[in-house]
Amino acid sequence: MTFESLGLSSELLRAIAEAGYTTATPVQAQAIPLILEGRDVQAAAQTGTGKTAGFTLPILQRLQPLANSSPSPAKHPIRALVLTPTRELAAQVEESVKTYGRYLALRSTVIYGGVPMDPQIKALRAGVEIVVATPGRLLDHVQQKTLQLSQVEILVLDEADRMLDMGFIPDIRRIIALLPERRQNLLFSATFSEDIKKLSHVLLTQPALVEVARPNTTADSIRQAIYSVEPDDKKHLLTYLIKNLPIAQAIVFTRTKEGANRLCHHLERAGILAAAIHSDKTQTQRTHSLHQFKAGEIDILVATDIAARGLDIDQLPFVVNYELPHVPEDYVHRIGRTGRAGSKGCALSLVGPEEARERAAIEKLIKQPIAEEPVPAFDKGGRPPRRATPDPEDHRSRYERRHPEREEPPAAEVRVPRHEGNPSHAHGVSQHFSRPPLGLPGARKPREIPALLGGLLKKPS
Image (cartoon, rainbow, N blue to C red; front, top):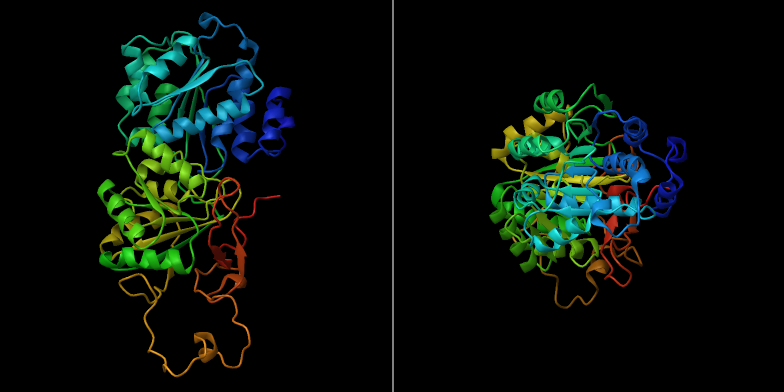
């Protein structure tokens, strides 16, 4: 379905076209008309299916009649409030608001913790119609009386299941008590747990239900594989895979902040450009690391589950679970960082014997087994095993000694996860293609990626 058929304004259609989109995703096609009607909506869809645009576009359309260029703050009261669980997701949502609302005289701002409040206070006092916020920092502003929520017409809870997991329900209840009783409520989530259903009964009034995929499923565009490995060998296997698959860029998930720091240090000592992102990092550090990763200046982003929601990396090829999460739903959100917006991706998990329970819980949740791949031979330095030393008098190249019948060495062969139903992805296939840089012009050239991904880095035409 095209965006034109959804009844969006010409200003929004122009911004959408400039962003490179022409066809609405299923969740957008179903949610946008319902929101434009003013109905409460409870929507669930897999991560990476366009949920953010599914509510930002109709919100902008509904507020468009109130748009004005007056410099008076009183002419720009807060009309829409979007609550998110993490800083990264809040920043992403507000960026979408600015992208799609560039031709509308509507103001927006984002407020979250970890940064000084003064710039946020300045933006709020200037007047904004749309506020994207994390609950804790929003309540800080309420306490300091730097914002008023008495004219809010639309409330959005984005990634509501994650907010429940993070214990934000008391804060959300305090915020709801400050809002007008008559308003439109939108609840967006990747999963529909029992707790979410209970929250919807309290928050929503005769909601329309939008569910474009079975809850807690993983996208078909993501190829999943498990390597069984002892815990002490994980870092060496990861180093080997990064260098020998090769993995040009990936987000690697760990359970703890300390584990993320240790793994990042190990990768850097192995000559791999890496950065860690977790809650002990300042927001400035997290933003800088994310910018470097998007620009292709670093190869590996080692993250805790704080980054499992809200990171939208265009054409990210790999996600690696260095450790399986304790909560199986987090696996769905972690691997949802790849295979987004119709592109293909690969999720690799390094699983130790002590993680059998977590593996079983994940496979039960997603209702499918995850294929197990043979672990390649590697030494403790993350390198291939050493071969016998050649005769020093033999001056032929290593390739000539191994393949005397050939004249030119072929492309390097690697064993890659098998893709069921497609023989071209069998083990040992040595097709190759180059991955374009993720970042700005002039960024250093990344490594090549084998046919493991079957062209996943190509944007859909």
